[in-house]
Structure formats: structure tokens, C-alpha cells
Figure (tube, rainbow, N blue to C red):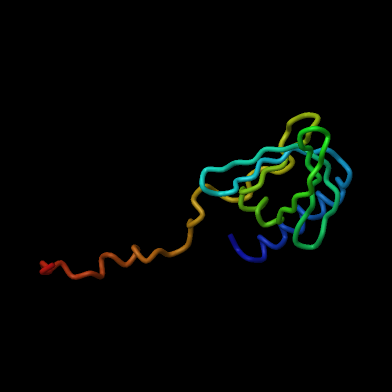
Amino acid sequence: MELEKQARIVDDIRSELASRIDTRLKIRANMGRSKIVEAEGTLKQAHPSLFILEVDRKRGRTARQSYQYVDVLTGMVELFDAATGEPLFGKFMDDQADDGVPSLLDDVDDVDDEDDDF
């Protein structure tokens, strides 16, 4: 995906979330190492590169968590409407992130076919 297109999508995500300040959202965030966090909370702030969600905890407590718009773009963070469960955004990127990007393995036929001693 081109850099300009990514920047436009991030701007679209930012403006959509800015219009949803103080609304309830569900979030599913891939934290790496097979750890996926799901929470529900209120969108509190939308800054130029990140947004802040006040999530519900046990015993009536809340915690503030920040996420980057780029993580929404790449699919590492998914946002849903808390009332309907509908996703706020569709998929922006294909599962194969290397489409159209040349790989080092693309030049394999340049390797000579002689037997190498290993």
C-alpha cells in the first residue's frame, strides 16, 4: 500500500474517531505473543497520532489505554460499536502484506545450478 494512501486512511480513522468522542466502544487488540486483549470503554480523546480509551475494570474501576491509528490500519487493533457489535472499520490491508513488494527470494533464478560443496 502506498504511503500517501496509508496517510489518507489514517486521517480518515482519526476524523471518524474524533466524531465519536464520549461514545462506548469495544476494542480487540493484538498485543503480540498470542495475547489478545478485549475490553469495552469510552473513547475519551483523539490526538494527532493516537487515541485514548477509558476501559472498564473490575469493581467499578477504570483504566486509560492509548492506541495508535496505525494499529487500526494494520489490523492489530479492531474497534466495534458497543451497542451493535458492528465493526467501525473494515479491513484496510490484505492478509498478505508483501503484495507487490519484491522479495529477496525473487532473484533465486540468478543462482547458478552448480553443485556447491557444503
